[in-house]
Amino acid sequence: MTELYLGLMSGTSMDGVDTALCELRNRRFLRVVGAQSQAYPGALREELLRLQRQQPAVTLGALTRLDHAVARCFADAATGLLREVGLTAAEVRGLGSHGQTVFHDPAGARSSLQLGDPSLIAALTGITTVADFRRADIARGGQGAPLVPAFHHSVFASDWEARAVVNIGGIANLTALPGADARAVRGFDTGPGNGLMDEWIQLQQRQPMDREGIWAASGHVHDGLLQALLAEPYFAQAPPKSTGRGELNLDWVRRRFPQLGELSAADVQRTLCELTAATVASALQAHAPTTGSLYVCGGGAQNALLMRRLKELLPKVGVNDTGRLGLAPGLVEPAAFAWLAMRTLQELPGNLPAVTGASGDAVLGGIYRA
Image 1 (cartoon, rainbow, N blue to C red):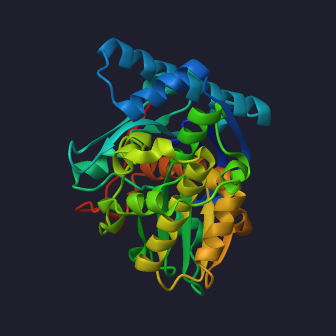
Image 2: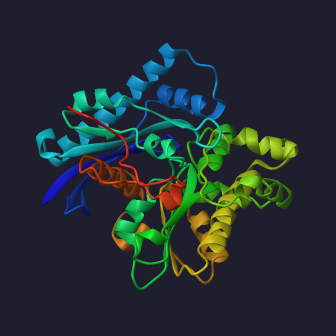
Image 3: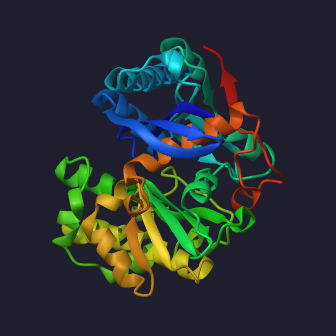
């Protein structure tokens, strides 16, 4: 039986809402029927970034207002895509909304918070909505992240080659796919993805991102800064583990290297790019040493310098983006949440306990009827 599901995703870079309308058959992903990206309004993005990075005291009224504003953006993205492809809400079986993460601390506070009121999304779109995917895993002792490795296995695993997938968004997360057996899948956050580079170029040049890594390529790696950042204990910590931009941000960089202001701005950008490449490569070598091919998705796949450095640091591994396997890098995460929504609506587990550290399988999220 073939059904349509919508997946909505906004990652820790907070660029906006990525939407994918996916065709699934017999619980398996077939293809993306249509996709769209919609940027957050500037003022909303700045408010969300401040909440995520600085974790200031916030009133309940302000938090509720943000919850509704994010939901409206998500609903607008969903309805806009349906208009573009000429379909109605009645033709879509379900919608999976990741929401907007503003807090993630599964080890200390044992919680993860995503904004984007799913009841409002369901009401505005007319589509049954699945959301709040992380808490069921955390309740079972897991990290609540990463959740996409189960989808990576379903779509990208091979029975003839050991593969890995790295999603480079604001944070980078790695999925090891040593074969077709789902029980062998491992995954975890390796550390920073684009987040630090985005913060630095926004501060220095008021640009949203370093497109293709051009600015970073104009600088040089500062070894003192790189080694200070690589000494962060998180990088040597054994999986399962997850992190976020509440921990790995420019304040963290300044704490680890107080002389930051003395360096060339371009050299800092180059070093932050090297940090992402080095931590991804090190994680792959340590935890998936038999990998033959690494496939990159997320915004990092568009950074030519970062992709080149991954190839240089992993000379025995074939490095490509996921488009080589038939799914464009920017569509992997929204497609994953369309697939996870299907799992929830069919009362199937969506987590992989070996990845998250949960005590057992969990049907993820809540169901909000239109």
